[in-house]
Image (cartoon, rainbow, N blue to C red; front, top):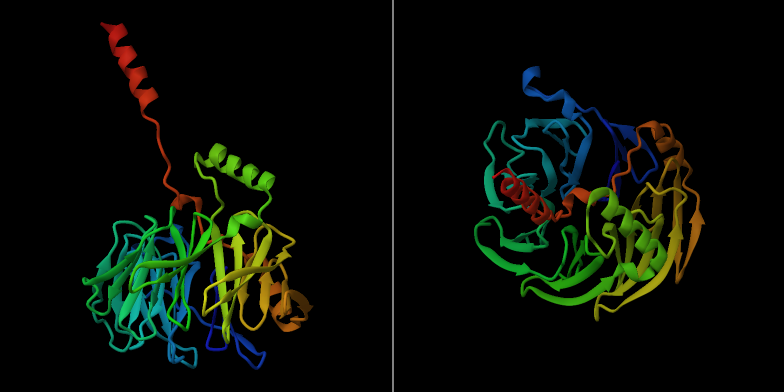
Length: 365
């Protein structure tokens, strides 16, 4: 399931279904056109599930991508105006302030598409040596910020993105999410279990939140040992799977989920001094879930639960329409953890294999 809350609209993707909820509590299901190309050029076994959703800041355009390399752009009345076949599977998309659509693929490249001109070839903006996991544009439109599997956050000039302005280095594992606060402080979440705050133009880390501090030691060890045994991954901290941010005056609410922990941890961040304090946590009935944060926190399993914030308390609120609508698609729900264990770098010990082969060669002589 893919969720986007932008410009007072809620977008929900269930497999191949795309719903948009209006502020008037109405919703509609949007048409997803078939790819405009020969059938033999589309890999059917890749599926057609929606993978990414993004909207332009002026609400003029919304774009989605699918597993079969399809890019569809909708106008402000939700009619498809572009249907593009991508050369590679998209991992992240976003609109620049000039409504140029940026597409980051699994090869680590970022391409720029002009959605106003038919059949115009995309322009290569930049490239990483590993998978780009998230990408955002600064509000001023002068910088594009990307993060990858190799623990790096790169700040590049836009649109001349061959010109790198700065790197923000400090994470120990892949960086899963980026978010820019109104005061231009960059937040980053990572597979090392931390959320870090940056002055991104100077590459300076301003503060750090260790999200694993709230996990019981016995549960942490159990999940870490399972990952080591089943996936051959050697870690000591659980990755941040989802970070949702809501700004209100000088206070910022962070809602954070960790891998295989059926809880959402709530923190309050002072946007002036960047001091972060734990507020509360919410138990989720199921291990697999999705959530989004607006003026309320909504948690989606096979039903929808809403919460209001009241100082350090959270109060349950009714969300009947959303619950009834989403329950119709519960058979299609597939909650992504957003931090696949594939992002971890597996360490292989070749010494034992080498010694075994050496022993065989010596014995054969």
